[in-house]
Image (tube, rainbow, N blue to C red):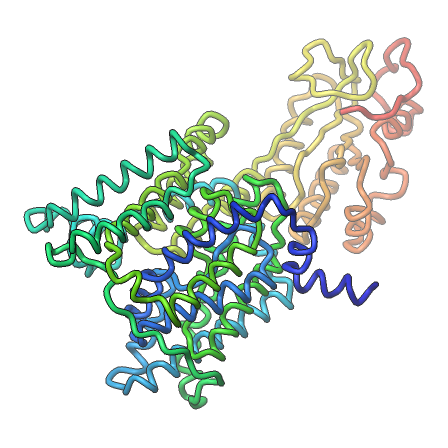
Length: 581
């Protein structure tokens, strides 16, 4: 049983298939047919970007989908050739394999897939999925909107019957704008009509396989009306001989030259795939294992390395279509790989008349429905700074690229976290009649404090960025007190951590208070904080009589006269109840 449990953890696809329900099959099959139809021309195009034979893009999709179906944690993510990864791969190979023969170029592409696979495997084994915890909701929202715009930008030239040369979103938009006078009118009309049909089907018949219907209709129209002769670009003839199996034949110098690109691709692949996977995991309410995502990416790339492929990753556009079509499990990837393999080996002539603009329409509509502007507005209503972070992520992804945009957003989010922790919420506490415990006197104006005693709560871990702030606040409270202060009780219930700088700051505060006749007392220190107080020696210098398990215990000690209170205790003080903050 333990062996089977380990296998299930390592190969989550087996668990999906064990719990498969028969009623899911129809939606999974229709989604697979559509994904397969999309992947055929996309795989060919991305292979050409990488600089390998067109058929390599088809087999890269087959290998990626099959491997991820077994080892990937997402039920919806479709892995295979993708524009961003193809562009990074092409740039890296251009530096290493300039002027090389096609066989060496293909070997280097397979080597890069192998290196990405190994680095992803290490990420999974080292549990580096914690990196995904840095990708907050604003980053997620900004990324998905930016990715959707990138997808739309990549298809604009095809929609207008133009050649796409620019790689950036801004360049693609400018390229189309500058070339509008050269737009191919029949292609534009066919593309707009295809978009209208997809939107109409989505509104009127939401369960109908709109993209698949469109592929069939436009393929038939392309054959009947010979659209290619009218200037409409079609998929055309495809030569798709199967790949040779084996490791790429390259040297150590090639590994060293490709290592920076491999690291970059690994991070880009992981970040984009885990963000897309989390979007659909949240939408369909299941858990996505961020460590396992590394292993899913590793499996897809390692298999591609052995089949003379090139680096693959999660596809935002095909994943969005999968969700739109109602796909439920990774059986979609398995069936789609079968569809692509069968077409590659036997049926490629059937797609020769499929207009490329029809595929552009499918991708554009899927991307539009992938966008989530409403969430940005929701963030603005709750916390404007997080909406700004989402917009920064969106712009960064569009202008600088996926990895750079995400890294900038993560840095800004961490900066905002430090800013908030440096000036956290705090409160002076008092007793309120009819309520247990001690409460913020600003929130409850009728709360009462005791002469000679200040109870101060600090709602953050104590570290270098806020240590001085706590000292200044504490000294200010003592200086502005109406009666001489004898005890200053720090309610440390929210202080779960303490660094060396903060410990030194507390020691300085203790000495300053001691010179003024004020005793520093710490109450409700949790186990991690108590351990750190002992290690720094602060617990010994404070003395056990000034470390109390609860605020009530500290107040009881003060009332017993240990603090030398300036006046008599308040009348009718009940026994200390449990703390309720």
